[in-house]
Length: 337
Image (tube, rainbow, N blue to C red; front, side, top):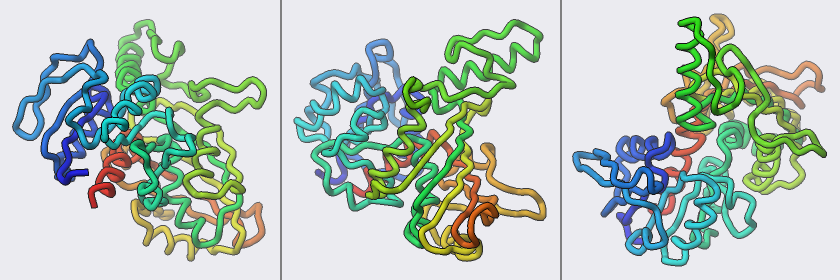
């Protein structure tokens, strides 16, 4: 790959696509040229970026003839169609969708966990699910210290995980409620404001697990390179605009004290400790929104397990940044290093 690369952003008009541009600017990501791609309905729109006006082009088979690196956030069906075409033409794709995550020939990467897997790519690198990333950034260093054998996680997932339209609907429902109007529900087909409900991904009738919960298990095993780790998840949508939270309970193979765990996390890349018991200051969505790190707090011994073998955490991470756009750009930066 040439450095700086000829760069493309596919799905640029969506929430993650727009975040790509913000992070590229903030991190001074180098590129020789930039192509902004989206669906036919967005083609022709103009976007100002780094002092230049770009015209959004319709994503098509010929979009990657002069592109070295493409950041995709256009949905699974689009990725399945166009990512292989881009790879065949010599472009490396970093894909945010679920299309290739469990493909054995495609690396699934969290740079703080398994950056070495980037080198195994055959033209496509997969970005994990947002909830998986936010969990794995703090769990991985603890896994290295004492080996996690079991992880029980409950997620509190923001509207941002369902895209810009879901965020707008939550805001509109808040306005409607405040005005005493009937609440409209197009995205989730139910009231979102003042409500919680099981994650909106499809539920397997045989197991009762939804797709989001299954992703957290399967993706964690692939990223950690450990098929024996046990993960069970309960994923819930909460009326928060941006940033996911997760309650994480861990069981270790070897004893790890609370003090040792705190030191491991304090030194871990991509982690910020927010754990003030005296003032009840711990990770919150508003604290994590717009930030790169995953915030970790409520670190405490699990009193239901033998001393040293169980730990509880509460984490918050920006789903659009570290859970999507930032993770992909960190992968791209590794490709160029």
